Image (cartoon, rainbow, N blue to C red; front, side, top):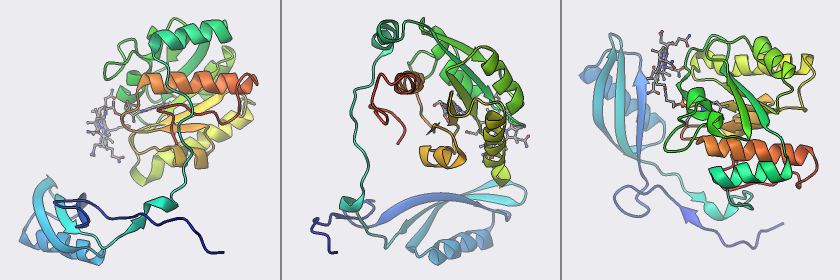
Length: 262
Ligand code: B12
């Protein structure tokens, strides 16, 4: 079948429209040197890039170098082919969301969060849960209609699930920052197995977050949603409220809001 949709071809924009210029950064496992710079150029050429300029080379460790490169990419994509569901609901602010919970759910929503496995990075989960929040946005502990428990770092998955189950939590928030050797994926899969064993899978909203997490990855791993860099606590609060509403059949399944992960 031939598509009648009009194409909308786009390329990366560097200095002028459609020049295809991109900026990329990466690390090579060699000491910084002229040879390393050549290696960075060669690497980019083999990626199919042309007019490669190494804008910066920095020593990352004794035998590692970090590069910032400008180059031209031949890639052209058809923007018209991309089909993504559009926003349906405006995200509610702090006061509106609390009032909404009071009116429609009439109980405090319970959420448990932690950085699990061997991961010690708590700043991300703290940003979402702690009173002071992140980027001018209050954390979930500040919401009168949420009861938030932050268990900290290196929490075993089973322990987080056990504590959440004891309190009949509405949502569990798992943070994974370290991604070396895909440890975040292995640990997330283990979390999902534990959630199934404990009988909470499909009953509680399970959220995954971290700098290398996106919604698609989280869904693949078995979570209800994934939240990446720049997530605001209010994105998470809105998501949990909609999930609870949907579980109770008070809102259509799949209802999204401005800021929801997609
Ligand atoms: C601070 C820091 C540390 C501190 C952590 C202190 C603490 N209490 O958290 C300390 C010094 C302890 C540390 C240790 C290590 N670190 Co460190 N660390 C960092 C650093 C500089 C900042 C991370 C951070 O705080 N970001 C700010 C927060 C706000 O961002 P975020 O985590 O992305 O969170 C946001 C979103 O992702 C999202 N989010 C996050 N989690 C969740 C969860 C849910 C449910 C939701 C909804 C949203 C969400 O919301 C947040 C707000 O928008 C990064 C480098 C960098 N610049 O990012 C390295 C970095 C993460 N660390 C790294 C490493 C390797 C380590 C060590 C292994 C080093 C070592 N060899 O010992 C150890 C880890 C040991 C361990 N077992 O985990 C690497 C990870 C590399 C990789 N890809 O895996 C990084 C990227 C540095 C690097 N370039 O090498 N680290």
